[in-house]
Amino acid sequence: MIGLPSLALFVLARIELGSSFSVRPKAQILVTHGLYSRIRNPIYVFGGLVAAGVILYVNKPRALWLFVAIIPLQIYRARHEEKILQARFGDEYQQYKSRTWF
Image (tube, rainbow, N blue to C red):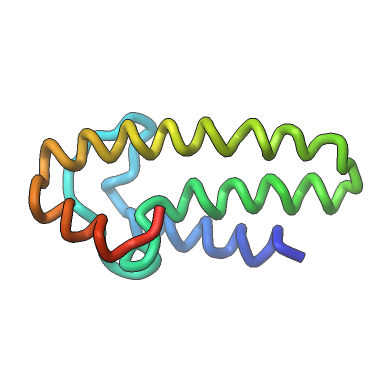
């Protein structure tokens, strides 16, 4: 039952990111509204939960290793993006980071 709500939140996060979305981080603007006001990387969080939901829905618990493998990858990507955002937005990003999760 986590798949559909997570998918809806994933789509919402993508919409809220708007034109700032890119495969490679570009730090065009600092998005801090909506889901981004609480979670710095909602696309990664909810994307992972969608993957876990699909695995559970198709009743393939052994495939949960894919979910486990995704976690370090998403953490790596988030940290890489943080470096770029910190370099571009400095104190503004640091303040944003201090009031949000992952």
